[in-house]
Length: 226
Ligand SMILES: *Cc1c(COP(=O)(O)O)cnc(C)c1O
Image (cartoon, rainbow, N blue to C red; front, side):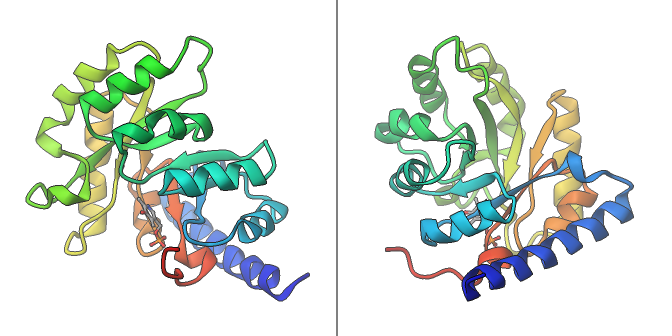
């Protein structure tokens, strides 16, 4: 094994051990959790190592990076897009990402709907929740507006909303913020919750997350974006 692959294998084992700890505490099963390796700004060779180590879910924040990596890597990878959506990039994003975690505008949902067809049955969308509405640069729909937003986009053809996604504000207390979102997802009768990053994925699992998006705990501290 190359030393980089060795390092990734060790990091991944530590992440899996943390996941197991949270599962044991919450009485949940490993197959209830999808671990997404966030490979943004890391080379495709790192994603390939992780593929060899058994991972099949990868997340990217930029359309250009996701398009490139998905073309370079095996076809049975499930790609997740979790960056801010730009309207002019939508058709390209839908060309490689099966799951979009960052839907936050009706116009974008409507545009996605127009690009998708009835055979896109696997495509899933998460609505991004913004818990700091005073910071609109973060992306996401403010929590009180989520039910109405969901009602408006669920009627669009081919837009299958599976749940809510959130990036926690630094000041938030993870368990309480995540549990609030879990209640909201129940209320909306949606099946999935994309919560939890390197620093807080145990709290996310304890609160009912179905998808965790883990970057630095697996790949190390991120290089500067190219
Ligand atoms: C970068 C990023 C992650 C991964 O963050 P880490 O703290 O490195 O695990 C998860 N979700 C989103 C939306 C991100 O932008």
